[in-house]
Length: 409
Image 1: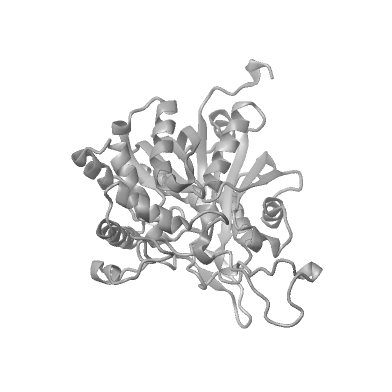
Image 2: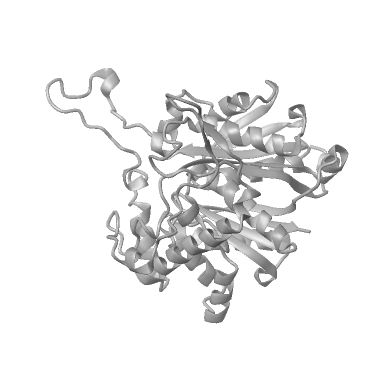
């Protein structure tokens, strides 16, 4: 491609929304993830009243194939059409585990840079409650003709065959970094309390759009706030919980739930935003990916934030706010130590600017949607604080990580 076709200006976010996140077995239990994704895509377009014909492409993250398979395949294409976008809208479904919707932002930025697109939506959705049990071999009769049939629950241990459960390995890595069970419980409590304060101040109204949930009888339920937070959490209650999946430190209390939700981010060239009369909310300076030893997944957020900051040409101490997805409480605790190079004062300072409105332990973690969620939460809080540089990082299964640097103002 001729270098003159590369776009060298700024890429800006003009709209970003998510639907409220629902707990496992909660309000959204029976809704297709495709419909959740469609709601977010529709909402991000409606927020700024952009003509849907202006959208060049949609990247769609989702990473629970068994749930998507209930509605066949090509989830991104289905979500685009269900959202009412024109048939000509190009889409692609991607799976980089929990990183997927932030990976969607990265792929969209790449297309803009090479001149393949001007306007992109990065989205993601998941409904973990709707994940079915599997019966391998049933089609060809490779099961007992007399006797019990074995069902496989892919949510159990939420891992990948041939690898240890993520909770177990992450708990072990936490101890190697000097992060104790008590540290994780204290962070989980802090996440819940920070979220409760932010919610009481109406901070999530910028990012949340309501969704109607059909009912068998009567009118639909209007679902308009996150269902997972536990404001009555105490450190004492957290300390009494048993560890899970053989982990030495991880419990159901210092980890997020198995949630449902969707997110969408609309971004474009700065030139196109001016042409359409849209106000930029943030400039995307860098979106990067890393991969490391699968066992060391907890280190991925720090590694990718460092990589993204380097590419953006800024230092960690210039960053005003950081969002690290709380796949477990371990992740922000390890990330802060790594970014601070184990300096105790710097570590504590970073924790004061990290997940300031609470994280996935309180909000929930519908895996395909979480990358977009941390990006918009970061952006809106930076805006409330007068702007500056922000960083977000998220880990993904088997040692993956995606991160971004943005600037507001």
